[in-house]
Length: 349
Image 1 (cartoon, rainbow, N blue to C red):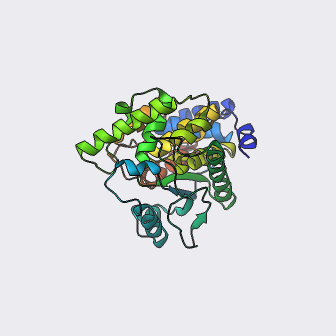
Image 2 (spheres, one colour):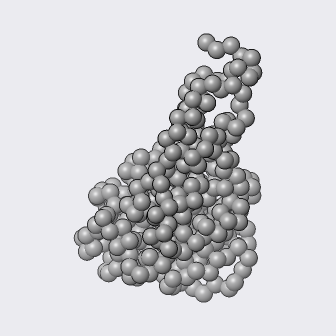
Image 3 (cartoon, rainbow, N blue to C red):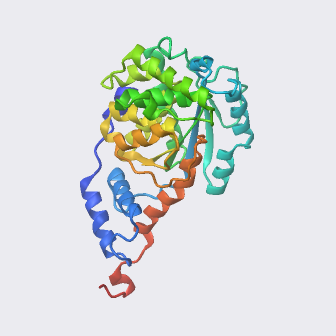
């Protein structure tokens, strides 16, 4: 499945991008007046190989949930059982991602790719558990290469199922207590940045916990010596099951040439792995927001992606991606609905 997906990922279509830029020049607005939204619409035209590109509606959020063995290193004050409890909250519609999704008219699907506690079947829950949480990445590989690959395939399948179900754009979500530690390690592994440069305070940890978190990431990097040329190996050594699944989710979106909006630091970590596997997959990625986690900025810089909003968010779940989604839709709608100077009878300068 992974190889077949990678084979379908193509560069953006240059002719469609040229057409989109030319259309923007004829619309009833000063050239460049929509700033980053203009270039975003051009990128999406290239992704779809069509001008104008399809409207990215409806949108679908996939929240990939998993637990982390590195939790035992006391990198967060939150107990591990919160992962399963929050999954139940998502399914009941009581989390922030649910509130934002209702506001935006998006669907929310929760994917159990590695929650430690057993979960009862429920509407909106995809049961795809690879293993009940990872091992401690600071003392050994978080998972085997086969497990990482299986988790990538979970993400590819979820992307395909949501698209086949009618979604025109995908939005990343994640849930996993201690997953910002794994995300920091992945970002350092793929970018060469130091642990201190990419490790943040996650849910708001105190200074002793933060320093311990940096030390854990440093120890993991020394132990595993990640090689970005082996992205699945890096995911296996340092990542979470949700990071591997998110990687597949991004690849699946790119293979189907539909936009995928990145949420926070875990999505950025997964995007680095996806780009290492298929560099052209970044054409499908839209950076929804800039997380306050420092690793997100480091990763986005390497990916060449510019966040649409910066609201000092650090929640995860897909919340930042949802807030950015109407901007993505608006950028495309301009190409569909705004009149040209000739059609509107408006004089040009």
